[in-house]
Image (cartoon, rainbow, N blue to C red; front, side, top):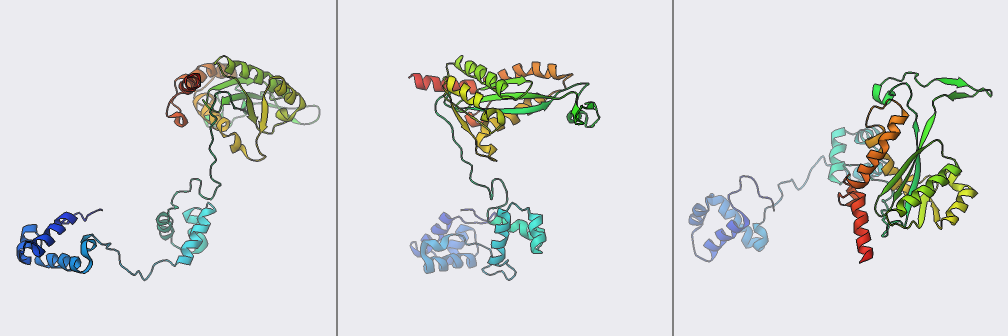
Length: 324
């Protein structure tokens, strides 16, 4: 219970006041003087105790029992419905013709002050028990660096990436793209990354073979992999490669990238910690810096989903548990 900042008596003090009057036979004036309160206040607590018992000695809310300008419940329900559609307070105020401060106070009072995942499907979180039971694979396309840093660093969208028109009349960029293939273990978040020239089926198969070998070097037996529905992963040759490696291939539901969320989140971490974290002279320098950052991620970087331990620590824990 929160007492008023200037309250003289706690609940125990009020009980002592009542005990002195009712049991010890003190006068109301004597009991009030001993408690350091006015006789009027002492009379109030005595009357409440006689009417309600011990419950009458608890503080009551100072809010008025009736507010003439309180927003109607139907309007509050309308605000809640619009909030579930992920509308901001300003947008709701404009739609309903209300003051922004009123809408803000209402959404806070009904527990919808922060959007978060409000109005979205509940997040389905899962984590496999065994290292290698499931690996997530995805590809991130990065523009090659040529002629210095790009607009992310300089803030200028200069045409350092020249273009040409091919024989078919299509505009082609002469610098092009690099494709970062990532594989991350579901149970331990141990990651393996390569920068390759394309995302074709044969390239994806080669990366898969090397990723499986990499995880095997840590004592992990890869059983399943999950990817998106890219053409490389839907190809027949990729299916044959999975069967040859003894892997079960799972694919995400269409338009549901969150199914492969661990790879998506790792890519976001990777971009912030490596790809966009420094100014590189060219793509070769950026690729050369990848190995150092990946070692830091796997061995030293605290991971929030792993109790702020690095992936290698989770791998050792799981291996010890399985071994014992």
